[in-house]
Amino acid sequence: MASIEEIQKAVEMGDPDAVNALLEAYLLKGDPDEQYDLSEWLAEIGYVEEAIKVLEHLEYVFPEESQLKVDRANMLMEVDREDEALNTLMEISKEDELYPQVLVTLADLFQLQGLLEASENRLNEAIELLPDEPLLLQAKAELLLDSGRYLESAKIYQDLQRDNVQIEGVNLSERLAEVYSAGAAYEEALPYYEAVLADQVQPDVLFGAAFAAFQTKQYEMAVKRLDELIELDPDYFSAYLLRAQSLNMAEDYEGAYSSIQQGIARDEFDKELYLFSGKLALKLGKTVEGVDQLRQAIALDPEYMEAIYTLVSYFHAEEMDDEVVELAETVIANEDDWAGLYPMLAESYERTENFEQAAVYYEKAYPSFREDPNFLEKYARFLIEEGKRGKALEIIKELQVLEPENPDWFDWQQSFE
Image (cartoon, rainbow, N blue to C red; front, side):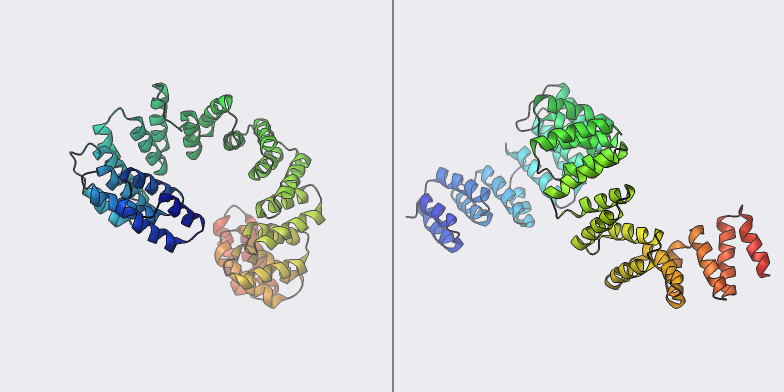
């Protein structure tokens, strides 16, 4: 007879065929309790299909054991065999003592399928059966969170905390902080983050507290928490960007630039770090560094719209028209939806006297910018210069509608008539 040790060795060697062959032999004569433990171990290490086979065997031997059905249903859900999981759960009677557990598993299944109302109904039914079971209340709080009903979720957690309920592995203050943050109620989240940190300092909680402080414009507090986080875990990469953003909002631009450079030194493949670094460098007058860092961001992601738009905008403002054309035409060749670049590209072509291409991009930009007076004015001037007075008059009339208080547009119209 095959042994558990042989099965474990086959698993360690990465030989699934051997695992299945040994499993078949072992199930014929193995101890049921050991078989159950084996199913749990197999599921934990990713051999879920094999674990399901063990449970199917045990169900055949012990058909009245509902726990085996519930366990198998959970495993079936893990491998996307949801219909089978549902059928398995429906075999269990409402009179079964495990029926509340069945309802929770059904709730998980429906939540997995996006059927949030059905999931909530099952949890409510389970809570009616066991109204004082904290795990059911927590499950409902998490479902409400997933449904975007943040205040209702927070209310359940607040009630559990008020009643001094202890749930193994769950910090109620931390859950409340995360629920409030998920609902953008950062002012309410902060005290709960602080309560967690008073007991135990954890990297994710420090970051959550810093982010909540940033969102409530408490930039000094955000930097303080991020300093603690970086000291605790120098490779917590997102901390560097948030620290730089906090310092930037506090108008410490040099400090922000230094922070973002530290982040890049830790993670040279994060395009967001290069984007923010490039923006800061341009703000500080470090134009060479700024352009280089924006190009680095684009090199990491050739379709990184924000970095491309930032760099083209800089080139356009500096009238570096050749650079505008080179970069904008390169990205437009690979992607159709770049309407935001068209007005700048049109102006650059106009300034370099390539009027044919300027006309092309003014026309392309028009549908997206027809309610932008600044663009329409430039387009109208271009049309006048090109002798397209009829089209120019149409644009001028649109300007009159957008800005009826501006006398210039009526003066323009009179000059045409």
